[in-house]
Structure formats: C-alpha cells, structure tokens
Amino acid sequence: MKTYAVIGLGKFGFHIAKGLAEQGMDIIAIDNDPHKIQVISDYIQDALILDSTDTKALQEAGVVGLDTVIISIGENIEASILTLMALKELDNKNIIAKAITLTHGEILARLGAFKVIYPERESAKKLVENLVGNVVIDQVDFSSTIKIAKFLVTKSLIGKPVSEVEAMFENEIHLIACKTRDNWTFDVEKAYKIRENDMLSFIGKKSFIEKLRHLTKSESE
Image 1 (cartoon, helix red, strand yellow):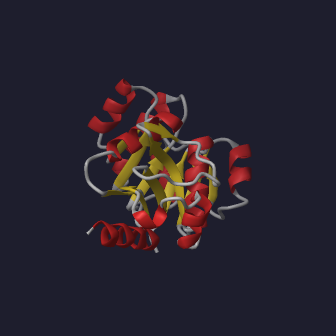
Image 2 (image 1 turned 90 degrees about the vertical axis):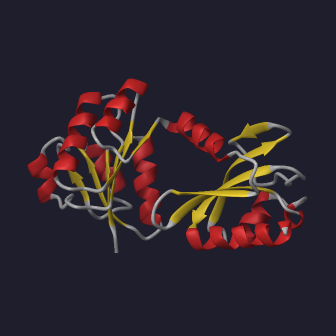
Image 3 (image 1 turned 30 degrees about the horizontal axis):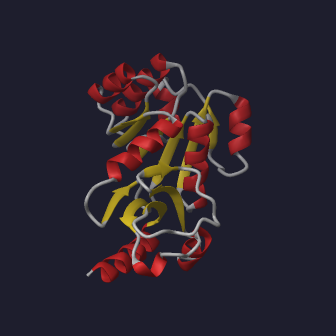
C-alpha cells in the first residue's frame, strides 16, 4: 500500500489527512503543534510532532521516497518553502503544496512542487471552473484512489434528489458543486432535485466514479 504524508494540520490539512485515512490509505500526519497531533491521532496512528523543515527529522519519520506528500502549512511561507526543499532532498515524488499568495505559489512551483493549490473555497472554486467545458464528462485524479468528476446530467437523474443519486453509488460519491441556471453553488442540499441541464461535480472512489461515467456515457450515446 502506498504511504501518503500530510504536513500541516490546519483545517485543510486535517480534512485531507482524515479523508485519506477514511479511504484506507496509509498516512503520516505531521505538525509542530501538539494539540493538532492529538486531534488527528483519533483517526491516524502515525501522527508526529516535528519540524518539517528539518531534513533529518523527516527522514527518521519515514518521509523518504514517497509517491505523494501534501504540504498544508499555514501562514509561515518560509517554513513551507524550506519543507518543500527538504522533501525534494529526500526524493519524495509528487509534492502538492498549498500556497498563500500567487508569489508564494510561483516560488513553490519553481522549486519543484508537482502541483500548487490555493486555500479552501477559492481552491475548490477554481478546480470546478477548470472542470467546466463542452464535454459531457471530465475527470481529475485527486489521489490514486479518489477522483473528481464533472458531467451534464442525463435523463435518469433528472428529478432525483441528491441523496438518492449518492445512494445509487452506495454513498461512495458525494456532490461538491452544482451549476444550475448558469450559477455554480457549493452548498447543495441533499434534498435538492436535479434539473435538466444541471452540471454536477462529484468526488469519490475511482471505481464508483467509473460507474457514474459509464452511466452518463451510455445515456448520452
């Protein structure tokens, strides 16, 4: 099983680490705040208090040669940059780094971050906007087991509440955004009944996203 590391356990990092753990992934969670480590320890066994800018400490924690590491350090831009440099030195592969500003993001990208993301709602908004296109369905790999999919609703889904659609896929997919009447919204009630021409974005396990893809593809042909 692949091991992921999440460094920085603010709101964003906490939910990423918790979500990956809930999907059965092997996670190393790191922060220099004992309280944050205590909280995440309810979900992740390998939670460590350490200075992520310290190459030796990361090496001793096993953050070496990993396929995916997520840097979610808050306002400390210097620590974010030094952490990335330490991770690169330890031959970690796909480093996804949270940036506070565009300049911060440009520095991270130049230093070798595989992907740079921006905080919370703005990050989600841009991701959904990037998914919008003229195709019936589009997909983005979030991790080795999780995908985000965008598609135009097909006949079998029209009139169904969101809760029913999620249940069709054993609640292993979840609606994260809906475009209706040319407006995107991120706060969609489970009771909302899907309308003709709605555009939906779901996140979920790859196998269930594939089932969704096959459904929309077969109905659009």
